[in-house]
Length: 143
Image 1: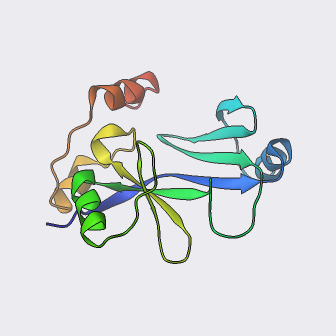
Image 2: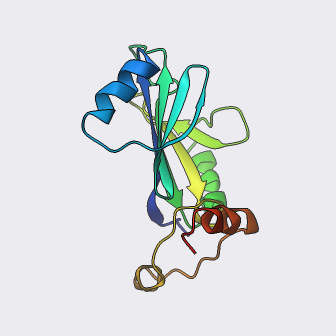
């Protein structure tokens, strides 16, 4: 059984300067920072976010990646292993496509990202959220 794609969790972009990137994006969008750390800024987009990472590099993606939300992370891991696609080291389920794009697989249950129940039903999915994901949604007033 293959896992269904459910949505996108977040996008990370490498930039030369966090301050310049915030100034640039701030000219076009109302920015709400989720947080700032040395060399990083996290721009809130409701229950999703855009991560800006200082240290732009050329070549295959390193820190830059995108997250795909799925209904069954274990099924994706199994399919990747069966196809002998290398999985990046660490606790996440990350891999690179043949062109160097880094992809992170995220389980719907474990993140704030929420599909409307009608949409989930239309996709043939019945998914629940973890206690931690529900707490994050409540803290934002989204539940």
